[in-house]
Amino acid sequence: MATDRQIAANRENSKHCTGPRTETGKAKSSQNALKTGLDAKSEVLRFESRPDYEALIAEFYARYHPTVPEDRALVDMLISSEWLTRRYMSIDTAVWEHEFFRSGETSLGATFLKSQQAFERVGRRINWAQRNYQLALKQLLDIRAKRIAEPEPEAYIQEPTPEPPNPEPEAAAPPAETESLNPKLVSFLPGTPQTPEIATNQPEIVPNTPAHDAEPEENPPTAA
Image 1: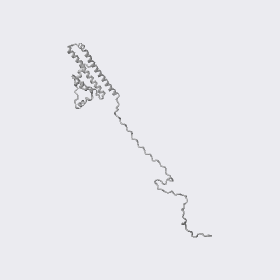
Image 2: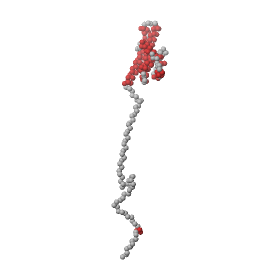
Image 3: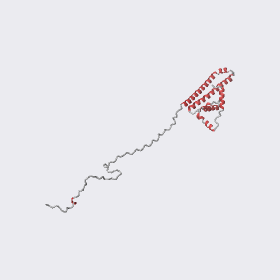
């Protein structure tokens, strides 16, 4: 449980958080609503300090730098739990002051006994907020430790498929040797003039001569 000195120290530290000063810092801080689900208008009551709440958000985001949705949700839980703890601590103090003013008591014991039920309810609220804080912090640290030990594979990045090496051009096959053509089976050889084959050792053929073309004999044979 935070003491009054710790609460006062936190308030003093928050005063030093003046926010961004440069134009770049102001541009980044203007996008804070897109990074956290917390809303100062709904979380801050009318008697609470809105600058203190915004300074608390800046401190936690500067401390943990959440970059993924689950981290942001847990950091927001830390901020909300811390803010509620501060609120319930203020209520606890207000109950004491109210009872002192109402009854005029100066004894702490007598004042506690008169408002014991109210103090118990406030105490349960403080314990509930602190348990939520410790649980969110443990989950955040466990998730980050697991992420460092076992980094998630980047499935969305597709590695380029290596191209196969260009195959060496195959050597041209030598032309198939053609069998020599048999001149007796073909009428002519390709690429050479046709030459008639001269027959050898063949009887000379003499054409027949008609009978009327025969020359008459000068001395015809006489009859015996």
